[in-house]
Length: 248
View 1 (cartoon, one colour):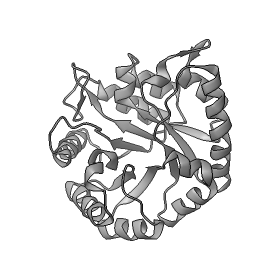
View 2 (cartoon, rainbow, N blue to C red):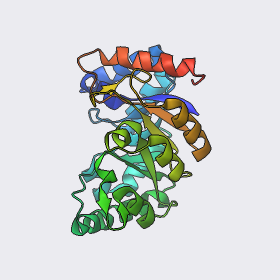
View 3 (cartoon, helix red, strand yellow):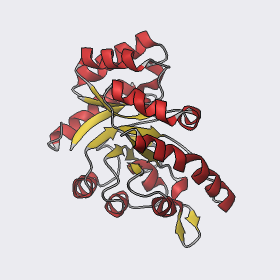
View 4 (cartoon, helix red, strand yellow):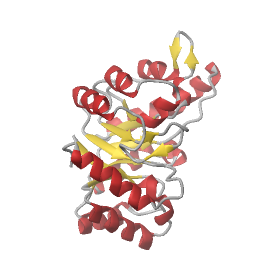
């Protein structure tokens, strides 16, 4: 498994293409070799390809605005070929727990997932805590896994949001085995705030073991809220922790 940086962590430094390019350099200087592009300014796929090459970085997954995904998923998938990225991600959907809302999601995103698959890329859904609310005889996350064939959708499983919902991150990674090629690593403090990897209370040794068994390829460090610390310093400390565990 390889580690990477989820650029949503440093989104405030990616609001223009100039700053975005500088951020890629800073992330590479920390030691990361892979990134997830998310929360940045708009960019052309050719521009991103060029900047990644300059920094010897690989983008392995994105989060694409929902409107763009729904409007033209085939184009989105073809754009990913330009910068050699296999995984096309949806970062958020605010499930309200109703059957009507679930039907709306399925009607919007099943066609998206199939169109992306047809173009040779793979659709990835990122969970928050709401996907652990009860739905019918289980929870939302289970229902999504049932309604979307593994052929069409995987899960960018997020350790922090699972822990926030009272779920066991390692258990759910195991349960979603074969569908979690990319996961998000973020730690969880006692006060429910996000933390640098290794500075909170998630048992990451179990997460790493479960992820390897589940076929995870990339573990992306993400810290949405750095609690007034420098986000680049947070990414660096997370990198150092992961490197101490033998990951690069």
